[in-house]
Image (tube, rainbow, N blue to C red; front, side, top):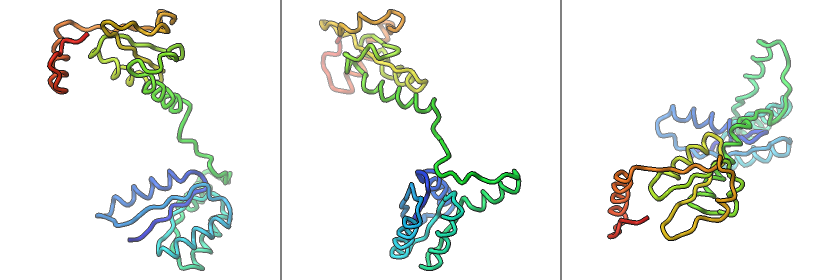
Length: 219
């Protein structure tokens, strides 16, 4: 089975995606992909070429440094390893069209902006604070949803997290006091979810049937 060595001076994610996008154009390609990121020295290039030669594989790379690309090409030829340069031809053509030289700065691409990072943080926070968990950290939540069971607290929490909000949700359970931290929060942060009694009863009945609970009339 051929092995594709994906090499990049950054993370290698973009290069690997490009390779996988190309491979889907072939019917059932029997290949394995090994990714090497952060490749910025001639020694690293030579080591990867030797591994590719030993495995009988080939290399696809997105090295922005002209010197590193030259070394990759030279080492590949010396060890009879095919190398595919995804970045060099593109940079050369863009240089012609833009009439400016490239910076040749490894890792210059930033696919994740601040908004993306915030969404990831919000989702992680929301998952950690689902269904009353980690109630001692409620003051860190930007929105706190409260409600009885089956009022869609979790789905709404996840939706809001995808919009960048850090959300916690707290269940209201008969016979159990809500966490004291809830009552210390500003009112504007707390949102109570309600539902028509008939709808709630139907949802709970279905839930009870699915999990095999005889007494579905819970609080």
